[in-house]
Image (cartoon, rainbow, N blue to C red; front, side, top):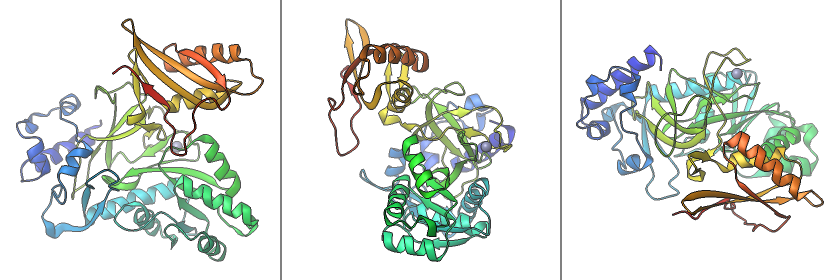
Length: 408
Ligand code: ZN
């Protein structure tokens, strides 16, 4: 935390606890004026999505209503949605941040930006839109769906930048390939929304569309997409540390993890007015990337999103994420991509068993040994590895369950 950030947070805290609002209640009994440094700040309680839900509908509003110009809402797939009120400055600040994202990706006012994320209550489409207008580019505000029309507009408008989720980008790439119209498409870059997506999917989209890809990160609770983006060197995402302060914490204990280690992204907003957030637990997993980026940008970096905290398990004091095992399997000859983790507690000890399908004709013994060694060196503990035949592990149409924790 630098001095400016600390001052911004401190001012925010004093303002928020001096009037009737969400944080006045949340920080009741805490001596906010007594916060002198980063260490004191870290003692503040986290803000959870559940807290925000309880504030439904407008309990998060931290300024008089006449200053609010817009609300957005996070997708309420589970229960009550979260409503985030924005002031005009919040809307402008978000556009500035997203504008920086485009600039980082080399997009200019001569580009034509084809926006497929949805417009409406959620922050997707409109975020891509405002940022594009900020840099003066021409936008084609499509929203999702109607593949025929998407492709027709892409051809006729000569769109050069595609904004999409990874799954929709893949669908469009496949359709373009299928119709044999790749030659009539002018796309150069893809700006892809921040879900975790595998390297294989990334390569397919890049190759089939013939574009450079950039990961953009953000969440409705904190402006929306546009608070971070990868640069041409594809080594994590730069985030705008004049707008957000990011901590990476151990999802189980809430303690900060050392730089470079995986943990949960926790965000404090530095300039937000309508609904500022202090130490907001995002449930997204990433890590800080230290050192200067080859691109020369002074903005700090976090890794692209490595998964969700819900997927994490802790075994023998080591946090393990299915995405790490995905990565391991890629470097072990003969291992396929399908695996399952079983965790048991036997005779007072945690045991982790990794079932993995091996490719036909592969030497199971070699796969087992190499996996054990790589698991130990990269993740930090030794598993029991059980190689099985291709197709032996159950398949599921939805996201398959990778981890079975039998300890509790
Ligand atoms: Zn960079």
